Length: 425
Image (cartoon, rainbow, N blue to C red; front, side, top):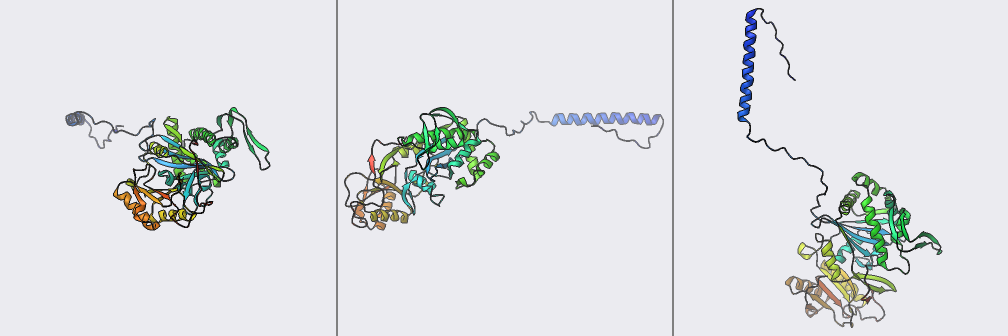
């Protein structure tokens, strides 16, 4: 806004008027000079305006593929639902790799046990590290929910619609039915949905429960609040019924990233390829190689662990007529060398009187073999060169020469009876 300057003590008469006109003319000339000067000195083309951030329909992917092991436990505190989720990175999509609760994993200090039981251990990182070791994949964190915590998550999104293929019945300790989910299309509240994903009918394969869990989980993730603060409050509200190995803020941020990829139709899900085993009259599973290794490479290319990236070498241990003491010695020896122990079950075929350590044809691999020979007290001839194994850097076929003499009817590790047709998923 222009302001007129105050004039004090102006003289009266014609001379004053003339002076005023002269001042006005000078002012006009001055303005004109300034204008011409500006015109001549201005840039020929004005600089482009500075760009400001604008909302985008596609979120920028994380520079590194992040991973989270998400588990749901039943009322016996067994993690019957397990999925490794990846988000961001070069794949720029959500990846889901579902695993059966009976998947055999190795936990330092606890031995070989089903993944479902590993969640009962006081060490909250037990399941995370076990899956990382078994599949050779970086697992950034774990998030475990009891059944009622998962129920709360479902209720928070207003329930979930499902198409049940059969009647599902949950019974109490007396064998009386307490929850019945009839077959057909229906919307389940949290409690019903929590049973829907954790129950396994006596005549059902494990793949049926995995399919139900997959269906419900993806729908719930897609419907979670897209506000970080609201989602964080929701997760915090689950209280002691849920536990994570990373801060709640990180879990919320990860789930929002996964949600964006699901809603953007950038997601893929698979079930780990496994071989079914009979262990103490119960069905258990081990990864079917090389299919499982290929799945990890396909779904988690940015998170796969290799020795080239500094990961410790993986040692696949197979029972080939070993004694209980021998298997224990091998486990301790692998730990002593700093390598990663991977239990592979029974080797199949006739028992071996002598342990064999298989390595690839490289100086590094033969050095690993030499280290294992030394800590196990074997002769150098125990190391043999074989073609590279995609599942491990070293394979030990443990015979009866390590540890005490073999006992025909006992074994420290579960002796697996392989059913070639048994594949989960």
